[in-house]
Length: 264
Image (cartoon, rainbow, N blue to C red; front, top):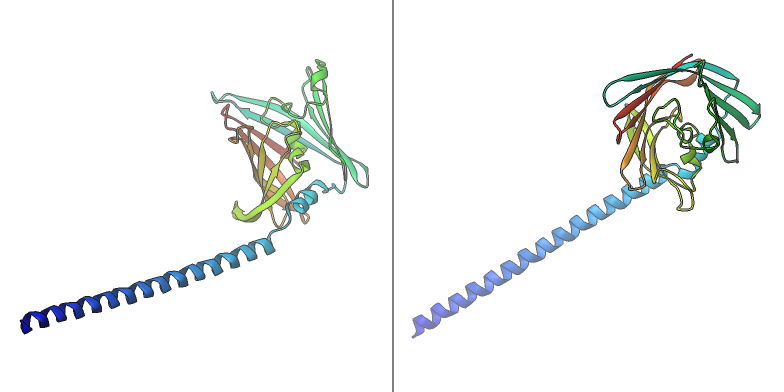
């Protein structure tokens, strides 16, 4: 009887020790979890603070690009090469002129060198004002005179693209910093309001920190899918100024690729 009672007592003591051990282990685990949560929370708060402090305001970034004014009148020979889905290529010779109209205003003219069916696209920019667009065609079409999304030389580029119309939208936000073409860029997200009649739901652009040039951009359609993808294919520095030599626009829906080559 005494032996049975002693065995039972030993079992009870063993069970109590196991319970105490398990509780202690669980408490240690809880402490570890709390420490881990605290560490990661502090780390994430620190990251958020650093990112918020280092990112330039989206409104200011868009404004700085919009307010860029050339220092002199420029005339450049260029060529637009469109590669169709069947790999057929269509080339169109162009001249691009930039004319200063005042201290804060200039006009850019894109003109085809075709003898027949010559087309002229004009974009007038002025600080603090919306862009003005105008199209002159041999075959006059009143609907195309101020059509922002009219294709230039049958390419994936539109007047609105060349006018950087998305930088005039009311919602501008710098969402992160990211390297593109081995260069550090501010990634700018531009969104229109529902009241604006546009073909894009948003535009993401990679703005080079040093040159201020847009090195790449993704254009999203009204369903939120990528419609077109822009990229700079040639960027050189001449006389202390950065200049773009070649740009490309890929239309992901129709499979075409458009390249504009500039001959300085």
